[in-house]
Length: 216
Ligand SMILES: Nc1nc2c(ncn2[C@@H]2O[C@H](COP(=O)(O)OP(=O)(O)OP(=O)(O)O)[C@@H](O)[C@H]2O)c(=O)[nH]1
Ligand SMILES: C[C@H](OP(=O)(O)O)C(=O)O
Image 1 (tube, helix red, strand yellow):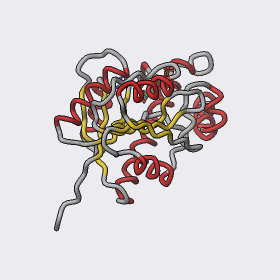
Image 2 (image 1 turned 30 degrees about the vertical axis):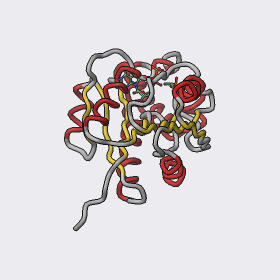
Image 3 (image 1 turned 90 degrees about the vertical axis):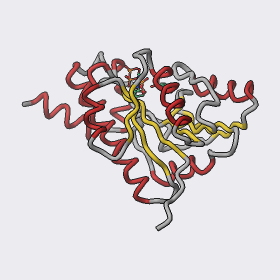
Image 4 (image 1 turned 45 degrees about the vertical axis):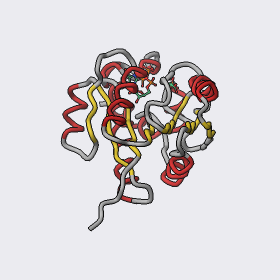
């Protein structure tokens, strides 16, 4: 059997659940915030496993984290584990992932945060298929000018600048570095879970689960 050539690595950055989702702080306690982060991570991994099973685009999956708990979970699953070189935030973790991808001969890196509210298969495959051209950056913006999907070829062609209005910063960088920049808006990838409103609008079931826990 000939092996399918895999040239794209999808990396999911994940922070320690106990430290995540601080912007939900005014409404949820620490245990609830960790539960939200854990549920979203599980949803993201199931989504990517299904992307692999659908087999329309050959991809490998990796998780970059500094958390031992998350590392243990990944260790028993289908994704590669990339350890953060140092605990220095999301951009540093992704720089480590890009180095790992280059070292392991991936031509393209796709960054998918673990907090997308409602990822859709067709939309994701469309975004991936737009990416992957030599020297290119494909960006799917969030509704508030964040970057919810990023596809870069080669993996180390940019310096990640996640944070406030990162979609605009990534776009600017593509222009400065002479990369072809493809903008791929997608309604299903436009919302990540940052604030309570995002949970209310996009993950009402999760909110119900949390209030059931409160009622016990
Ligand atoms: N590996 C790694 N992942 C991170 C780090 N910071 C954030 N992430 C992940 O990046 C994605 C987007 O996270 P953010 O929305 O910036 O942060 P968050 O912790 O989920 O939420 P806030 O605390 O409200 O900012 C999520 O999958 C996070 O788990 C980091 O320092 N290292
Ligand atoms: C990481 C950041 O996302 P936020 O969670 O702040 O929308 C971004 O998209 O650059």
